[in-house]
Length: 462
Image 1: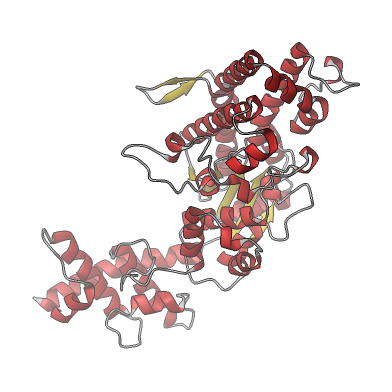
Image 2: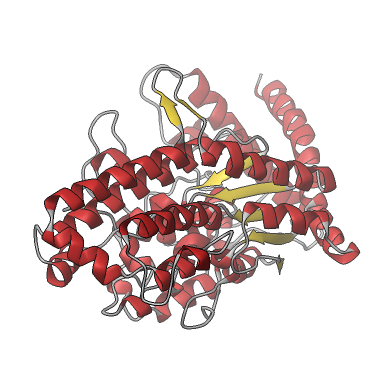
C-alpha cells in the first residue's frame, strides 16, 4: 500500500513540478513602475536616497524601469503608455511585475480647483491673486500659493458659524469626489473617483495587459497625509480651537475620500491591490467586531502617516506630503509582501531600515510587515512551510520538488531559511523525499477532523 501511495504522490508531484519548473524558467524577472511623484521618490528636499522601486528590485534581484513622473495624473499615465518608445514597450512586455502609484494628483487637483473657487467666494486669496490667476487645472502648489491660510485660520478661529460653513463645504467636496454610496449594494456612483480616476486606471491596466498579458499588476491605495499627532495640533492651533476643529473635519473627509478610492480600486480587474493606506495609518488600537481601522480612527487617534511623511513642520512652506525614506521602506515592504517571494534579507531593504535615525518609533503595524518581509520571522515557523504563508500544503511540496530538480543542475534558489524548512526529515538534503512527505502531510491535514500531529511526528509514521 505504501508503495502505491508513494507512486501516486510521485506522479502528482512530477506533474506539478513540471509546471512549476516551467513557470520559474518563464519568469521575466523585471519590474516597471508607473505613476506619480510617490513612485518617483520625490520630496520637497530632493529625491529620497532609495525609492521603493529600487528597494524592491534589490530584494527580488530584478531590473527596475521607473517611468513615474512628478505630477502625473491618470490622464498622463494613459498618454504615456500610448506614447511608449519601442524600448519602453519592450521593457513593459518583458516585465514580471508592474507597480502603479496614481490617482493622488487627480484627486488633489480636484480639491485644489474646488478650494480655489471657495477662496474666491470667501475672499481668501493672498494679496496679488484673484480668480483670473487660477489655472485651468490647478494643483496643490497653486492652492497653497494663492490661498491665505492665515486668513482662513483666523476666520475659523473667530467665528463658529464660519467654521461650520467650512465644514459643510468640505463635506460637499467629499461627496462630489466620492459619489453616492449604496450601503446595500456596497457600491459608489456618480463621483469623480469612479467616473474619472478608476475608469482611467482600468484603461491603463487593459493597455498594460494588451502589451504583456502575463504581467502581475499591482496598484497602490492612496495614504491620507493629514494624520497629525494630537499634541502637534494642540500646540500649533490650540486644543479645542475652531482651527483644530477645521483640521479634524479635513482629516475625516480625506479619510472618506481615500476609503472611497480603495473600495473602488477593488473593482478594477486584472490587478492586485497594495494597501499603502493601511501601512501608513498603522492603526494599533483594538478593532471591534466587523469594524476596520477606518471606523475606529478619531481626532485623538488619527493614525500614523505623520511618521512616513514630513507634514508636521513648523512652517507651512516646509510641509511635505510625499513619503520620506521611512515611507519608502514601508511601501516596499507592502509591495513585497503582496508579491510573496519572501526570504531573509541582508540587502537594501534591511540596510535602509537600519539607517533610519528614528526607527525606534517605527509604527507597530508597518513594523510587523517589514519584519515579515525582511525575514525576521517568528520562531514558530512551520517545518515544510517553505513559502511562509502559514500553511503546509501542495504548493510547498511542489516548490521543494522544483528546488530539488534545480539543485541537481547546481542552480538551486532556496534561501538557507527555506532549505531548513524544506528539509522535513532533517538529513541535510532537500530532495524528492522531503517533497513526498510534505504532500503526504498535506493529505493527512486535509482528511483529519480532530486534533492533528505536527509534521515532525507525522513523518515518523511513514
